[in-house]
Image: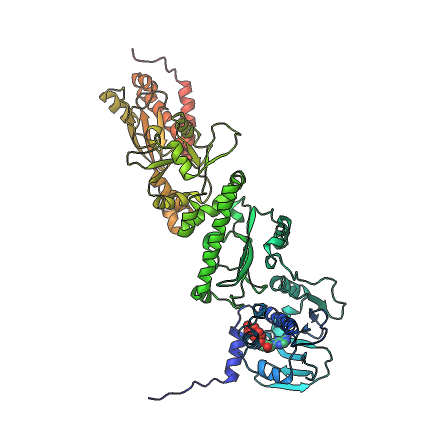
Length: 626
Ligand SMILES: Nc1ncnc2c1ncn2[C@@H]1O[C@H](COP(=O)(O)OP(=O)(O)OP(=O)(O)O)[C@@H](O)[C@H]1O
């Protein structure tokens, strides 16, 4: 057996690092500014423990763009590097001075250090032909040095005349990266990645005076103590993040330091339109450096609709999906966020129910989605999930029930023969009005489930609430909605029933109709059109999903026409002497029922109108058999 060590040739590895390490080229600025922040923070730490002496003045970072010279310079007033340190940190790829520092100064605010891998600096070569580093260590006796490298493994290192402590990194931007020689582009990148870094950053264009204000807010709200912040502070910070949005409903300040480090503020936005969803996302930061808006895995899926900021130094800058999935902290962060959100909602519900109800339009979306997708949240949310009741009078104050309250209010009336609670719901107050009124007449309580999430919610939650069954208010005749009532006898004779059934043998293109004659109460409509709950749900869901769904969505609608044999009109119809008029009358009664379900469209609707005009012209009901 032979054992050995694989040889790595720097000439080969260097281009690979440059090309593949980071897919987004604009992160070079993030990496270099992070290093500048680290250098500043390190000096602060050393000075606080007495290892660095003297007055350091204001820490600041400057980014200077010179289109003519084709350079971008990043300057800091941090600890700088001696010649030996440059050798050690810059000439050894993947040797991180940051990691070394964190190990050495454990317990000294080491979490403030961004660097981890010792690779970030090399991202400079993604956009540069040549990189120069001018640096002077905070240690008085170390002379300033200049390092230069053109992206090949060869470099030069010499003493230079830099007087000020700190580091200037000069990037000579290559031709392919000319886009970065644009002030607006740079400003955009700074805004994206560096907006909340803890050291002031100034952007300077050529020899202009530095801009009056730094581009960043060095003390973002999420870094402060919740007890130091007022409601207005939270709202102002929301405005800073999303200037064009309406004020948020409420917020949750996250502040954990064990067993993982996490700070942040999550906002519940007001959601009015479904298309707004996902426009503004939660931003993920690592030590105040923006990382990504892809917070999948870190944030539970149902909370993706939240907005705000999450910051954890435990999340590396070049975060990747596979990293996140494999990381044990990520699961813990995820659980923590779920718990915090449930705590907050429960507290609001218990202490300020009226306010909670007032926000239910937006909140409901989160709560329902959470209940469907997250078992832990489901357990908690059962206490504060609400149904909005359909109110009998228009303009009346909205009323809400929890599941338990609904159960108490309807217990005996809405229990079916299997002992399940039947929740009657409407998806469209206007279209299903007749059915709602009929249900109300029987003292049933109808709830409103008319948002985009409700069809899936109903399906999923029925599996979780095993003693509950949802029935749409128009899915059957009112007598049958709660499957337990005995039907009335039909007053029609068997022959009359058969004759009526024959008359109702109507073809309506696009619809599959089944006709049944039943004895309903005399004040029920002559014909009731219902769509079986199951079939309708399938079609609703299919319409929402992809191409496979359209197969189901295009299937003809299945409709049951329940003919109310006890309605007095049939006594007249059956006595009519003209078969043709009889058929027309019956057809119109059927169409009226379809119309109330919104199922009468196109040529079917035109035929109905023409037939009605025809009927108005006939002399009925004079020609009645004696
Ligand atoms: N502006 C600077 N001032 C002082 N030291 C610096 C500066 N930039 C880089 N260094 C030193 O060079 C080292 C290597 O930097 P590099 O960006 O490659 O890695 P890192 O910051 O340690 O980790 P990461 O890859 O996560 O950014 C740093 O750890 C630091 O010691």
